[in-house]
Length: 169
Image (cartoon, rainbow, N blue to C red; front, side, top):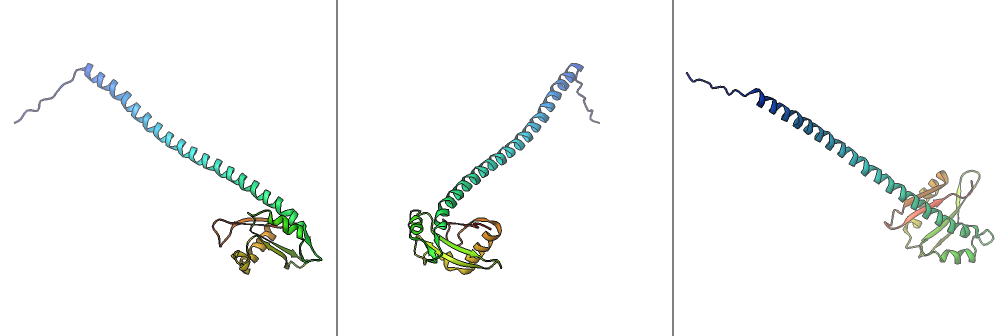
């Protein structure tokens, strides 16, 4: 029969191992907790910075849209009912804004029907595909009439935006 030899450790070594393992286990638990907290904090930081960038871009877009609406308002006010179109001064003013592609004016009546009053473009009307698509134009007009202001991508151009605004009631 084989004899199993037991290794007996003295109390001193047992205490030394215990006093070494307890801090190591505590340190490992603390390290795990610190890594989890760091990851959560990093995710929150990324989300917060994304929100800050989105707010900044929203403010920039708002300023840009208000600038466009401010530049378009004098043109719209130059609508001449006797000419049934924009006055020559309004047309000349519109031509000073090459970044404005087109302007279409509609007038609503008491029953909620709209009719086109005027249309002007800094490009040939054939180039501005959205102006030729009556369904798209009607959608823009209805959304602007309901919401007051819309800013949406031009469905025919990746680089253009459509800004539609209801002026008055």
